[in-house]
Image 1 (cartoon, rainbow over the protein chains, first blue to last red):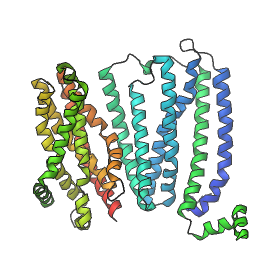
Image 2: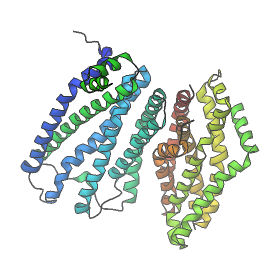
Image 3: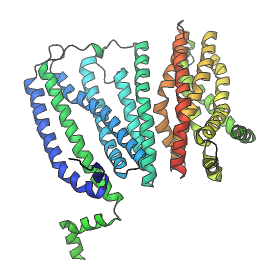
Image 4: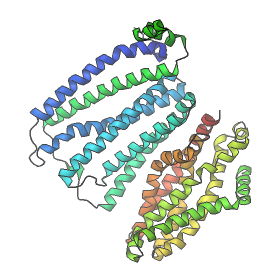
Length: 255
Length: 217
């Protein structure tokens, strides 16, 4: 059976599909969060070095993973939008950016909360922390550029180019920060030599990562639906849609 | 080539613009001793970072000048429809920007390095690192300048877009000077700096040309 994928690249077709998918992903996210929290707070053993405070890694590590994955996915959508001139791809990139920025911020905040009891400092100029901070700047730059250009088509393409430039630069930045850190060697913290994790800890982390994935998909779909309605507000299908919904009917009836 | 000559000539006719960048570099790097104190030991230990950050900022504030005037009077559109490849024309404009804004900073840097009590061999490395690194700043910055062409609040936006991308250049550049201060060889840093410049020499003109086509349409 051959599915015509291009059919779903039209906002008109994708809008109801996204609406159907959102509850699924949202429920999956809720289930995985509950399972992940249960494993990480009840089942996982207390770390004999770090005590109970280590449990923040169940949020911290998946958030850091997501922050990086979302940037790559966002750049892939943006590149696809630029190459195929597809409206929906650019909208997806735009919808993913705030979620990615939030996960980056979450990773930074939980990291510093973890750092205080472990290292005795809120912030250490560790290579991973620094590159995560720079990733946040890249997200903010993407969002700022898109929001300061009024013409949506130009905003899409300019943002796409910036995301692609960023993707080329991310490995360079990461390695330069890593080498900079090893040269300075101010702190004696070596995160690379972390002790082997227990299997339950890994399970908790994976469950939380899955939950974050589902959450990201659900939120990005919700946001892309809003963007679609806003961008396509002058088209017929949006007008028909607005007539169908009960709230607008009552408004129309009141008139 | 003709574009390069034209841009240089235009810059030469408006010499005060060039001087502004240079004075900015001077002022920023003179503020640090005032804020931190005149101890020579402290100053020479922060000198590599401070001088490189000042060079970074000086290069950045002049970025909008690469395309803004040509965009305003329409000659940029002529370049877009010219038969020559746009990336080549863009490269000429970036080279002109580097000669006007980057090179003076490189030449002035040893003087400020002296004020920061840098030893002689560190001064040589400072000039070398700036010479190798500032072209990358102009090249990467041009992408940001092209993307924000005619956008409201473009001056601040360029800073947000371009500064994160400058970080590798800053690390390797300041690292080279610091290494030579500590009696180590700066060669590894200088090689990496040259690699950054060469990589951006290949990719940045293409990206800038694409960005210009998006911005001008």
